[in-house]
Image: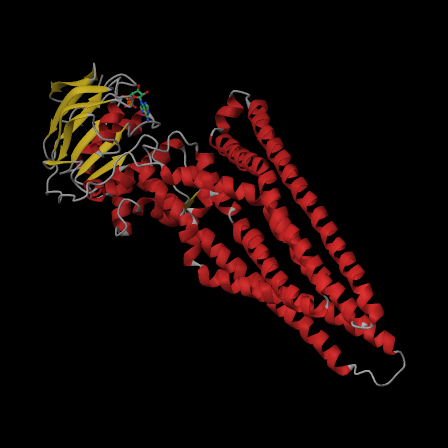
Amino acid sequence: MNDLFRLLPAFRRHARGLVFALLLSILTLAAGIGLLGVSGWFITAAALAGASLTFDLFAPSALVRGLSFLRIVSRYAERVTGHDATLRLLADLRTLVFRRLIPLAPGRLGRLGGGDLVSRLTGDVDALDTVFLLAIAPIATGLVMTALLALVLWAILPAAALALLAAAALAFLVAPFLLIRAGRTAGERLQGANARLRGAVVDAVEGHADIVAFAAEAAAGARFSAAADEAARARRGQATVAATGQAIVQAAAGLAMVAALAGGLGPLAAGTIAPATLVGVLLAIVALFEIAGPVMRGAARFGAAAAAARRIGALADLEPLVVDSAAPVALPDGADLRFEAVRFGYDPARPVLDGLSLAVAPGERVAIVGPSGAGKSTILHLLLRIMDVDAGRVTVAGADVRDVAQADLHRRVALLDQRAPVFIGTLGENLRIGDPAADDARLYDALDKARLGDFVRSLPDGLASWVGEAGQTLSAGQARRLCLARALLSPAAIIALDEPTAGLDPETEEAFFRDLAAAAAGRTVVLVTHAALPEGTVDRVLNLADRRLAGALGAVGPA
Ligand code: ADP
């Protein structure tokens, strides 16, 4: 519940639309009550008048037509405005959640799977539509109309007003409260199961080749089925809660009508209430409970909304691993970098790097080699300040990376990560992430440097060719070269390359390294690689061992 209150500011921004929808919802219900009440009164009165010509048909039938027209129009407008405001609200929330995610990546998000994140952004945000459309608005509408109708009935037939108040208190206060409690567990299970379901799908799509290669389809299928079964059970639980609520409310509405009828028989016999009026009163009571259906559905699903709000809140509570200093200093011009006695460990008690020092001059190209898991990628991540050092410092152009704005640092230092993604879109769009202002000639220049230019020229659509999700229309090597071209397009003065040739065939790999000096001309390069480097690729090769770098001066030839 508290997590839902935390979302209030988002609701407040759409308050006007939501209040308007609420007023329309009240108008719709009022028209419905009026329609049924007047119709009951009109039909009864007309029947009792029989053939007598004194009964005025015109006014009541015009009223019935007017009310039914009003009800149609206001219901339509209410649906449009209510859904419009709610969808805008959800879009806001999604943006809000996404904004929170960006500074958390990649340091903080490792523990949450991709599927779980997608679920928080989509399913959990969607579950919040219940809050206004199915819970707050119908309950508020029910309560307002109860008060108005009770006032009217009090003047006509006090017994009916009392019966109405009792039944409405049950329908709009007691039952929702109980249903919200009863639906809590099912809601929690449902949001959890949905997250696991999405996780299973994302994992299966991403790891499809491995799943097939290791004949693990059955296990992947079982994981999916288990989550699907759990979601189905939770949904059934929710539906049971809602149906129970409906039954209770229908019974309450029926009892209220019977009680009003019983209370009305005396006045009817005494002649203090007209028969037609009594029928109108009874039908008006029935009409009020039309709104109870959405209330019960909403109350049963409220638990899921609360669980969703909690999952979103948990994401919002994660602190980014690194934050900009309150008063960042300007990053001086320059392309040199230094690591000074750096210590860092993902678990500070077990440092990956300790006492590591490194100085790279502007325009210098160094390679870092070493066994897998030695901490080579970690060095590059510290350079980009994805994490902060535990001791020592990292400087770029003489400034401690902790003192400058991250945006400035990332404009100066570009990273081609091991897992650099190809995004859905055209080749051109993928490249322009490196430099949005680059013209086609520059894109082809970068592609040529990454040895992908001829391939792109051979495509009928060239740079406008579409690359599918995760670059499925490219081979692994081509996808890699595309990411490389993107990194080369970046205007950054320092380029960090993490295994840039992984997945390339030996000829392309060698060609790439031969071209690197020209491609990166004038820029500082820090290259992490396992590959044998052709002569002249880099100025120095440094070996990472025992948590620090041992320098070997001069270039090395092919191994
Ligand atoms: P390399 O690039 O040399 O293969 P890494 O820098 O990727 O090595 O990793 C160095 C060590 O840190 C490894 O033991 C790895 O398991 C660990 N490590 C890497 N990333 C993380 C992380 N996000 N959380 C915890 N440990 C990590």
